[in-house]
Length: 101
Image (tube, rainbow, N blue to C red; front, side, top):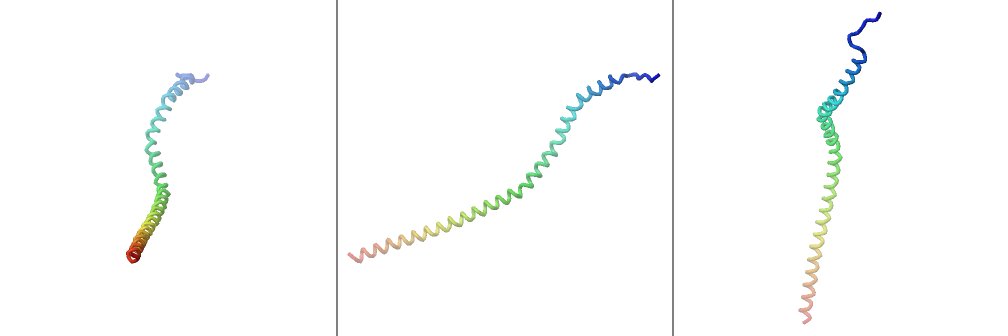
């Protein structure tokens, strides 16, 4: 004759699943709040890895801005030379008129 257990197997299985119903959400929430700082740290590390690409992009933009500033400065100097030449031409025309009169 098999030994008689004080609790039936079906009662143990029901109690086990009832405990799982409570423990699974609790463990899930705990893991979420416990792992969030780890995930945030990983995300920050990946962003820091991309900062090299961002830095290269910013350096390229700065180089282009410097080239643009140099070309604007060249245009500014050319405009100043043209204004000087125009004033010289005006003086020449004015001197020629006074001599002709």
